[in-house]
Length: 444
Image (cartoon, rainbow, N blue to C red; front, side):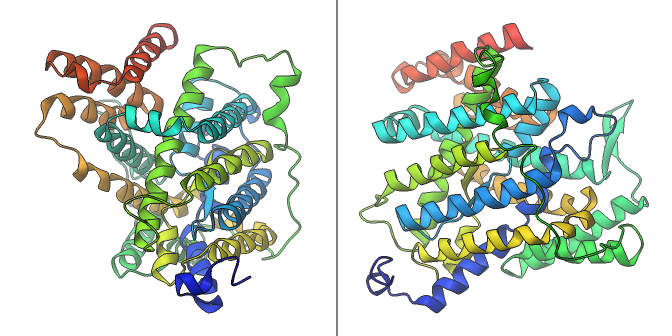
């Protein structure tokens, strides 16, 4: 085991890897709570039950997808990087694809599956580098920041801190509302943990907020802690249904946009996470990431597995950096994290205490972490600033990640052409320009 994971070469041991794997799990365990609530659209009232995914099934799918992804990363790529259904991508799945576009969640899962398969093909063929290089870094950073604002807006809305206002569209809610008060308390606690550098601060914030909610009778006390594992049957294999029903809903521009968005966000989120965590762990060699192909292959296989199980795109988590900070250096830490996700399936009854007010602070803090990429954008170059800004601002204002990406990718070739920088525009960007123009013509 030590030889397989190269303990001696990496200067690590079982204790460091186990502690690192546990730290990573605690840092990202919030997804076990947030993902089921997001994909089931629990915060949306008056919605047809047919549009909601089964919360219990999504909980199990989330845990299994995280376990499978982390295990593959640990065994194939041998990196201390854990995976789980990604924040931002789950919001896009639920609020844009299902709620706004009106695409059934079963078909949306097919979109996740297709994006994962394409990701595998791109990784195996070596085309991933060409696609990554075709899109300017500033737009990649803008997409990350825009998703961060979008997630934060969802959190504020779910907590009723921000509400609709007939005069100004949105406004400040009634902060004496118990739901808003509980969310504000949770936000303060989580901010304190994160500022202090507590590993798993977001997870602990959720736990403490839920306990306070129970104490003040805002949340029902759970009847038990460990219970039966929910059935996976409501979501398992749903992604494959269109292939057995005449490919209905697959060959549309709508689905093309959905698949491209899933693919794009996962593509660059994964690449950024791999480089960041590997660099922190000292695993980079000559500014290159060893076994990058294997890492991306593991990530894409996890997306395919997650789609079949019944969850949105599974991706590498930047929270893995907390495990590296605690000492993790090898894939064994990811194996440990995978095992903990399996065990977590037994604790489904505790999910009942986690309301929208409890998860709102987690969404807001994740948004804070994601907008850090704003500092990497060259705002002094107007031809770059315009598409980047429109990408970022359009996501929360249109309540759609896809729309933000589309607007930014349309304006980028325009501003660059006018600036006379034709040679800096990759041909692929022209293709994306056409696709997104058609998106607005036929779908908006």
